[in-house]
Image (cartoon, rainbow, N blue to C red; front, side, top):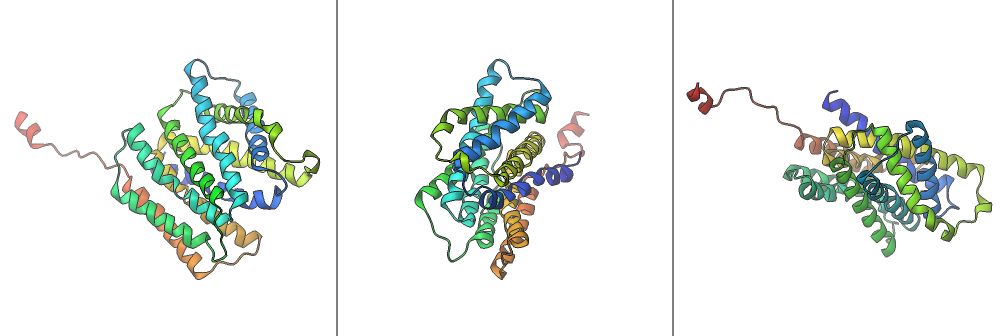
Length: 297
């Protein structure tokens, strides 16, 4: 496969994740973050595990629990907490900080070089996200902001470690292990969740089914495949497309307006994603003989 195809295919994951904002607020307003996280991760993980019929062994067991915690248990709990405490726009800006963490985590954990142009692209993308989703009425909640930043850091390290720890299994199997581990880590805390289970409706079930099967299982198979093929930094920059997707879905389904600043923000985000991928492109290997090689011959 070509790199443009791999980038475009990987981009499908954050584009779908952008729908999490609208699904959470419209389909799951009566559920708490912990309950949503458990019901999103564990059923989907167990379903995939039944399909692959393969479980991790040896050191992969504890590694899957680490990845399951970072990518799902911790990340989703904090993300949904932030989503319930903050306007969607503010939560999205917190998520736009994730590529910064990935860039530096990749440097220390994978030895990847830091490209100045990629830092510029990520900074511009964060500004674009702010223009796209922030409104004058947006209010900051301290704990919501802390949760949003911590959620971004959690998935950032999960993204980098998912590249560092690569078992010789398919992306489907890798996803099933992580989802199941993440869900199991959340189960002991589920009894303390404040959700009144008697209020769960058919609408809730539909929302959870979408978040689990599409927004988790399918998209993380795509995401983990992308992390394996392209650099974690390249994948994380694609994550800037998620707030753009959320804004477009809000405009289309909820009749929200798109102002001139929001339109400018959308353009800035797209340009930053393009520039970021350009900065991280693989340079072709030169086929010209070096001077030393000529002299040696």
